Image (cartoon, rainbow, N blue to C red; front, side, top):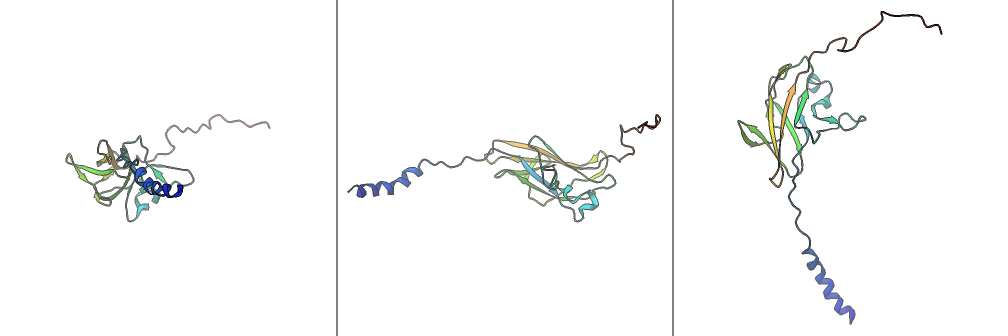
Length: 175
C-alpha cells in the first residue's frame, strides 16, 4: 500500500523540480581573448611564425600560446624593423562566448566576420594604420573598444642603449 502512494509522487517530482531551474542569464563579458593575422609567409614579416598571434605568452615553455590581457585595450603586432605592410591582411578574433564583434567604419559599427582583410598598413616607425573594434556582451549592456595595429620597431643599434664597455681600467688578479 505504501509503495502505491509513493509511485505517483515519484512521477510528479521531475515536474515540480524543473520549475526551480531558471534559464541562464546572458553573458555580461565582452573581451577579445585571441587575435591573429594571416600572412602566406609569416617568417618574411615576423621573427617567428607564432608572432602572428598577438598577446603575451601564457608560459615560457610554449611561447606560441598567447593570450590578450583583460586589462589591455590595444593589440599590437610588431613586424621586422626592415619590413613594410602595404596591403590589407586577413584578421581573426576569438571573443568571449556569446559576445559580438564589430569594426568601427566611419563612426558606425559594422559586424566583423573573421578572415576579413583589414587595412593595417605599416610603412615605417610611427607610420601605421590603426583600426578600432568594439566587442558587445551577449546581454547588450556592456561593450569594450580595442585598437589593433601592426607597427614597425625602431632599427636596432649596437651596442644597445645603456650598455657600456669599460676596459680602460684593467689589472692582473694576483690569485
